[in-house]
Image (cartoon, rainbow, N blue to C red; front, top):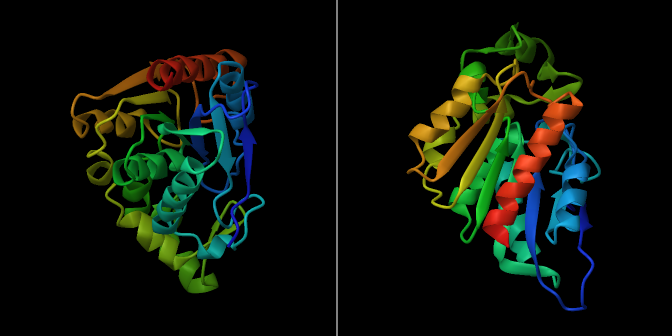
Length: 246
């Protein structure tokens, strides 16, 4: 399958190799992402940091069907993208960061731990609640098993969620697989997030070895759906990546 992407490269002398951030979008989203991966990429470009935003398979413009998506597959795809990005002629391969949103933060956290030489990791609204919620047998108050028995899939806001994806998420060891990452981690989470409760973001701090920080933003929801909250998200991310990539 082909995974399609957008790159942002700062202006500079030919042959310049730039520090680079790779963005991982959330569940059923795409490389534009609701809290604006585009806006974040433009800020980074102006600050001398390149970026790569890609669509996971079954999402956006990439090949594949959502019914075939698994989190195991998304982790593998993210690692494959990181290896490809290191070989791009504008990328400084030893100054590479990951930025994830929601379920993309869960994927990015695990990929950072399992793919070597990731210089920094920034997690937006990590949906670490997912294995616990889906493991309970319900998603958004609806029975997973009942729908799957009736239809062969669970209807996740218009996307066919397969039994394999349900089982994969339910069995995912989010914290155990993320914890081995030893680089700097910056977690941004709103205290009014009704999709991914703040308590699950706090748990990350118990699994990292003092290398993670959590910035709780008062009043922010899961999608960072106001101008002040989104500005805070972007500016905090910019400061973090400039500190650890440049």
